[in-house]
Amino acid sequence: MEVRATALNRVDLLQIRGRYPAIEGESPIPGLECAGVVAEQGPGVSSWPPGSRVMALLAGGGHGERVAAPAGQLMPLPDGLSFAEGAAIPEAGLTAWTNLVAEAGMRAGETVLVSGATGGVGSLAVQIARELGGRVLATGRDRRRLEDLGCGELVVDDESLVDRVAELTAGHGVDVVLDLVGGAALGSRIALLAPGGRLILVGLMGGSRSEVDAARILRSRLRIVGSLLRPRPRVEKAELVAGFSGFALPRLEDGRLAPRIAERYPFERIGEAYAALERGGQVGKIVVERASGTGDAGVGG
Image (cartoon, rainbow, N blue to C red):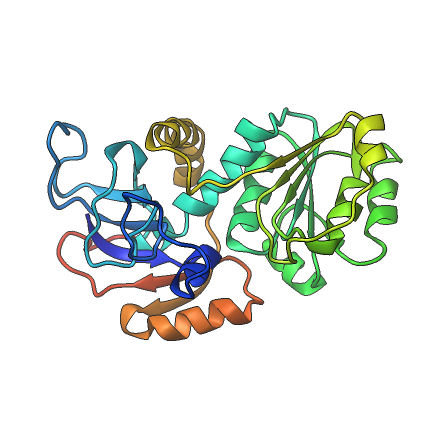
């Protein structure tokens, strides 16, 4: 693929600091998602002819000028979306989809709480959970940033969170918590779960240590699942991409799902983009764009 745009993830920041090594056998260049144009096909590949506009889920390499992407991890970039928008979808969308569907087994009618809802993954998770038929509670520290999401019932993540969720659910609790934060507050998020509820821990922005009520986990038959997307084998990723594509592509085409781009930078300023990622405070993804080549004239966005 010729990379036209890529999005930044906190894993990339950890990798360049030596705290999250590249997956063995994958590109050591950072970048877990990108959008661009197929330049050539590898041996045995008959799909994705050269010139195809695509989005790619990667285990690395998205920040390069070109990247070798597994055919099973490509998705067509809908005509109405720009390369920048396409770059903001694969890692965020697949993380949300994998953990809501494959890990949590979310069902229509269930109540889902997305913790850390204003980030790239969280903002898409709120939309995906809604499209799956769930009632969505979006939580974060900043009420104004939550309002910028434009969807979900908004709950500020402070000392009142447990009481507020109990009030909103008439004391029942939530069926699924998608936790993108972790840290010391993990115990309070477990306290939000209804009997038989599932908490899927995806991120540790709040830290890796917490005190939890193990008796509650037993008594309420709760499931606590840790989940990472990047280390999964390519075969499993291809299956997840196929499922996500069938669900998400029609919704991306008609606008029911829309990636949130917080900031855009030219590739020459990627250092500034990383500095912005480290500062935080964005609603959505930070995208880095390469100079346009041929084949993208007239593309929206």
